Image (cartoon, rainbow, N blue to C red):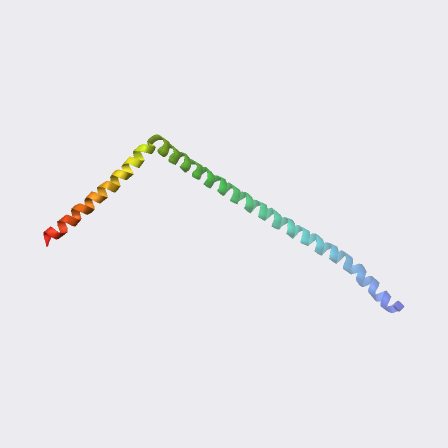
Length: 100
């Protein structure tokens, strides 16, 4: 390199070093802000999930109570409803030909 080129490059490099330092600091701050925003968003989601889990656990407890307290009664009631439907269907089938 000739001395004239070197004489021009040294001040340019000297001015670029602080600019690069400022730019890197700015990029670091932007990254920190993004990380903070992401962690806050994650915390909100976690709180929502905790609420939903508590609601589901309560529902399961209610269902367990229903099944254990009245398990046999529920099965009997279901069968009774099935039997009642069969009776209703048979009665409906018998009435239709008589009405013709």
